[in-house]
Length: 228
Image 1 (tube, rainbow, N blue to C red):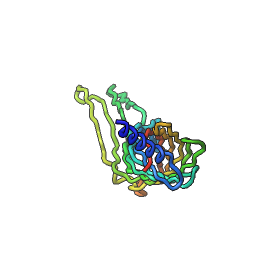
Image 2: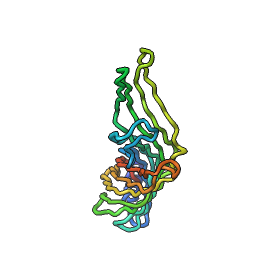
Image 3: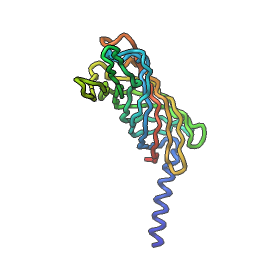
Image 4: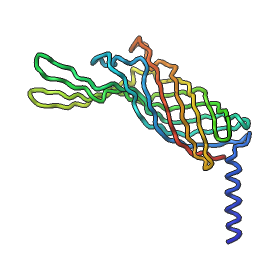
């Protein structure tokens, strides 16, 4: 029993030693969390219902894994692979028909997009466990849908119609952004990571719109980091 205990202590010591991330070592971090995302320059709806509406951000999930190489005690280079749910939304609004007295309500109006993301960042450690980071992120579009729920009256009957329009052909397939963030690793190797992804690319293809819209994403994730 004593030998088994000593072996367990030695194994744990090895894991802890690896988790100190000395220069020349690798670590890996699975992570998950959520996004708050919006598209810039999107006051007008893409499917011409109306314009001048207030935009709202969308909330979506993000999952991924990140591998980091410790270049020096205060510098690491990280590359990741993930999936990010993004998009933008608009306020609910009502079209009033003064002649008939019947109103049509439009609710849950939004664009939902999904991207396979490949972030590459330089992580500068200001203190033990505390890092600021920035770099470049490549996003590869998986889906883009315009969604809307309409409530109205037809032949004296109340109707609710949910619409979903595939807009993937209107979007560019590659998106480039700059991630800027801050992370902290606790003693138990749980990592809290917050970052803002500043979009550089126009999401629309040239033949769709002359207005340039870019992804903006605030991301918060929780991960577990361990040495390799």
